[in-house]
Image 1 (cartoon, rainbow, N blue to C red):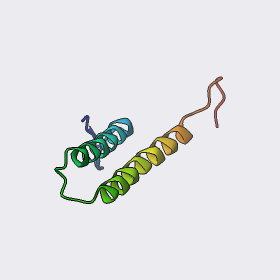
Image 2 (image 1 turned 30 degrees about the vertical axis):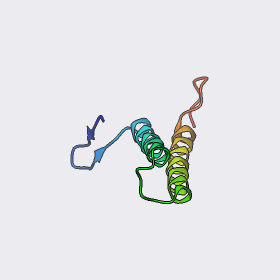
Image 3 (image 1 turned 45 degrees about the vertical axis):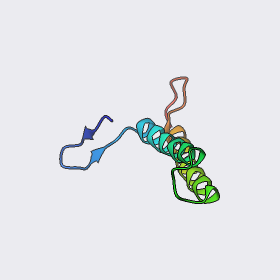
Image 4 (image 1 turned 90 degrees about the horizontal axis):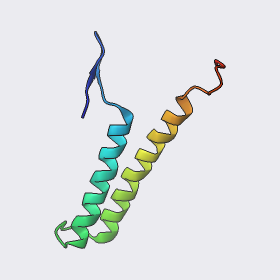
Length: 75
């Protein structure tokens, strides 16, 4: 992951890398259920994976909403 240091501020992560990480983690959890190695009920893991995917979707939506419009017009 690429860390961005803001002088005098926190370390930041690019949103696309965060959402990719969340989605890969959800996929790994689902794969572990399929392999029988999670020790959790499949419904629980599916609910957790869905929650991670929803967070990733919300982050993507918020980032898209912050993007400037094309055509040279400012907001």
